[in-house]
Length: 93
Image (tube, rainbow, N blue to C red; front, side, top):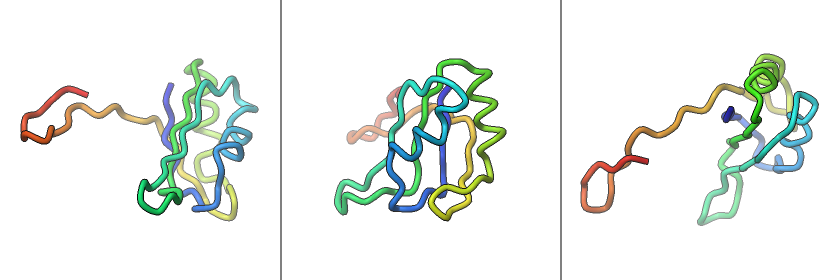
């Protein structure tokens, strides 16, 4: 299950996020979203936990918890349904 973690401090690292979620189960991937121009964190990340039960436990326990001085929000990530291509056509994502 893919989780969205919001309200991260700009100084939070992927390693810190991973260590916060690992007690609940295997973290398959952790992706801290970075701004391409500034190179700084955009304040959110995605964590992939393969077992749904472990992901739900992490979501319940960590939503509203503190990380690097910020109260983080954790919820299930929704997949993008469609994006607009450069030509203006909708394409599945």
